[in-house]
Amino acid sequence: MSVRSVWSLLLLGACATAAPLSGAAPAPFEATGGFAYRGSGASFSGDRVVSPDIEVSKRSDGSWAGRIGGEVFDVNVRNSGMRGASTLVTWDETPTGVIIDGMLNGVVMHFEVDDKRVLVRTGGGVTHQGTPRSFTLGRLDHEHFQSGFELRGLAAELHPPEPQFALALTGAFFGGLREATDLGAVPRQGHNTGPGQYFSGRPGDN
Image 1 (tube, rainbow, N blue to C red):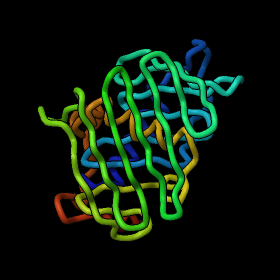
Image 2 (cartoon, one colour):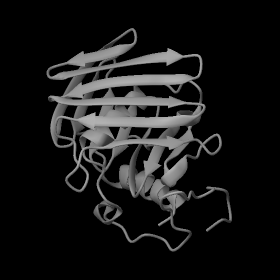
Image 3 (cartoon, rainbow, N blue to C red):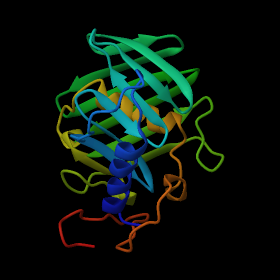
């Protein structure tokens, strides 16, 4: 399954299934950025972060609320961090990228994204096929990393918009990065990704 196909499924799922907190009809979701990795990921706009396991929206007072991995999520954003019940996520912009540290309901996560690599360290309960996530992937170009990890839109910038980028990463890994078969749609035929491979994501490539 191509990374481009995964991205399309994430956007379609967000538009079709995401419901606002108030119960009113949702406004059309137009993603401005996000990431995809091995059949899962998350996308964001200026006021929402969505995936199969995330539905979080920005309130008028600047706080964010919704659900992540089936858990209630409600945080206030201050400076370079967000804090709520059982939640603390911070981000630090560096000259070469961003460092994100998070704890959601006791699950500790650490991410580093820069011009050379993406580093992921998770523990305290986050699992994928029964094991904590811990990997470092080299950067191949502006959007693509080894093993099919891909940043899209504003997520690929040196300093992505926050808290959206931090919410997308911590929320998706807290949810365990569900497999592509859990996305509720049949994958489109195309170039598959795997260790050491990446999909270019250019029009006409699949």
